[in-house]
Length: 283
Image (cartoon, rainbow, N blue to C red; front, side, top):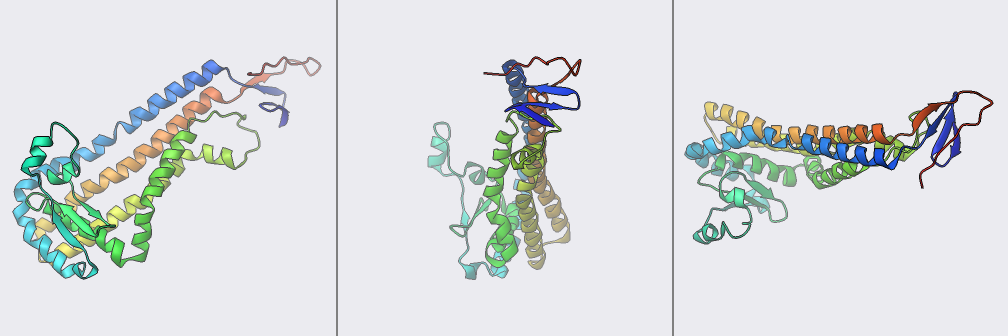
């Protein structure tokens, strides 16, 4: 592989010339569209969880006592963790159509969360205690496990890296496929894999939180049939995170390959060894 200029190469009787700006624009548009279409599938992974979450509102009384008992036996209270029962107030309802409400889904009983900085489990105790065991698992990951705490700390860096790989995927491929590669080229060639891997710590930590939450529920004496339903519910919750990781990796991969197809230098056969090939160069 012989470098002819900054972005032109010659190899084995071929020369590689840069692609046009129109090709690069077409590649960028198609790559962006494909990536957006794949990312648009994320709600499909969330839908089973949200459907059961709404159904479980009527069963909240079956889990409520076991949830608070689980909190008592978890040892989290001694670590400074507290439960915040957050529900819609009259003021919230008046403001609902006028501005965004903080913790809207939590107040509606459609979600729950553990805030590590505040050591608070937030949930609607009248609708969503089925989610509470999992949040206690998050608290245990944060306060009672070194490896699980590392997984938690990897969450936002992982999201950042995955987002960065989405940007890298749209970079032009300025070298022929056979050209010597540097670190930037290897990152670009594997950006889809990197984006997927960057999100795996979050998936693992979510799975671990569910596992610990189910163990607490069992220790609290929750009925076996309800434990079975709890496992089913948390499997659907985990699907949202695993699905997001897969969709993100595929979206970045697709964007990278489409951009590459439209921007890699084009291979042109040299007709005669004595003939001087004609090149064009952008700029």
